[in-house]
Image 1 (tube, rainbow, N blue to C red):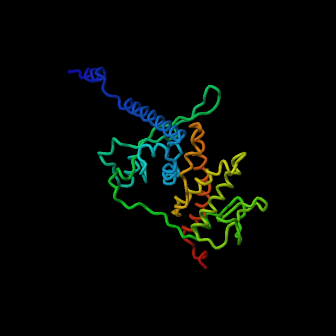
Image 2 (tube, one colour):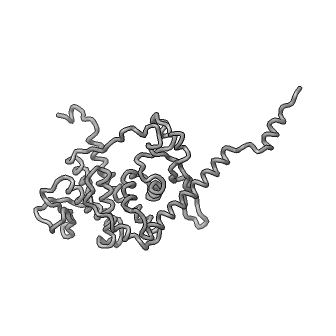
Length: 296
């Protein structure tokens, strides 16, 4: 009887490619490249060379992405509008174009938690390959547009406000809304249009949220974070942002340590997202079909 066992032994000896090992090598390379890109992006901002307005535009489109992942998108595909891995696109009935398979956008996603020698807890991050819709067979599909009734949008904005909001007849020249320290309330100029109300009130709400969360918050020194967070909210909900001047933000961040900059960018995102989360509850309720009892 012939013995064919030696076939498997010789195959193992010849060093057949180990798929898992290749994946691990690729994962490590992607992770190292991602961290290098993040470090480079933060260093550019520290040197006053970074495109902070461009960063904010991407953060507005990908509001669930961390600040570091937004920096990665900005470095690799700044025009991206919708990202997903191959499995995600396949679920949508869409395939990544063959010519684009070797051009993924690398982001980082949380991995397992571990304990350091000093007892503190750390977390590993895994590299993930995602692709913009422009790299797929769905590249010509129209992208969904956010359209919300002005009244409903403003109602959502002021819902669950941490401070009262009042309409007043007069305010200092050039200001649509201010926080009145004595009354502990945001005062809004009467008679403004919806876009002006959203811009003015969102800015004051961002200030209030930051003041409540940050010890020693100063509007004169830290107010740029509220300004940027308000900009993110306007971009997300389709409110005109042409009145925002972001040209000076890079000068505010220039000279700071990269890790401090990363923290500030995260703070801006979290401030906008906290207000957006309050808005979401109202907007979702409006989308739910009413029962016959509710319609009466």
